[in-house]
Image (cartoon, rainbow, N blue to C red; front, side, top):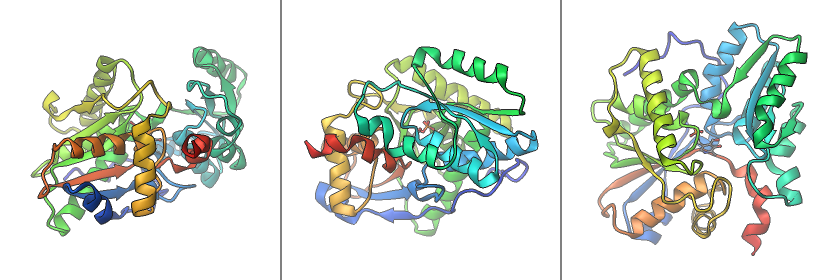
Length: 329
Ligand SMILES: Cc1ncc(COP(=O)(O)O)c(C=O)c1O
């Protein structure tokens, strides 16, 4: 067990999140027992995985006497929505920089979902192109007199990853209480913080459950691996735990499709299946593609009927509204 109590933390998330069996999905697939770790239910303005990271990041911001929080994300970023919500709750100003990194220009994509919620919660949103994020930030910094705290993209640094070290430990306790031996923990992976935290947290357990990150973001596989590897190392160093070898880092790159935020048929099927069979709302960008991966691997016979899987639902459902037209087709 890793002791996280020495690290500054504020309360933002509703924890522990439930570990819920997906009986109807398991029966439908005729495969292993599937459990869902409901990190979509962390509670902060529709919840999601970033809330756990923000408990540690926002504590740092407060310690640094920050007055303005700046962060980065895609137009429909869940990370930005949760950061804006945390700032609202803490009375901090928030100016996210959103970049048009997904080639979708529908009215719904550009105005609804998280983009709407950011503004509803009082953020001063800056929009730009992916090539101009640095310049936009430099201009903001140059004119700003308030004390800044910068949350990296996705909240993914060693501080943010502590949230997922905690999640791994919380999950291990739930598995232990239910006497479940899980074969794999599966989740959507992009900026590496969720995966790195889960790996570090799991590695400290008596019987670590392998973590499988589904790449939903990065076309450059080597780059993605290096990001996760680097953050695993930095998080373990921050905690003073043993170094973790590459054998703990498992990333599947087969379900990204044409790119980040671009729907795949398998994602559309997975989101629809979970909605109709379980009343669970996944998202089109992250958890939908990760679920599509898990379903496809189950259909291909990767896990037997007597095995048990954990799918971490990392949230993101507000973007369903931005992609509504894709489901209607
Ligand atoms: C819904 C959802 N799932 C998964 C992820 C991936 O988490 P990470 O950036 O820590 O890899 C994100 C990141 O934005 C997300 O919004």
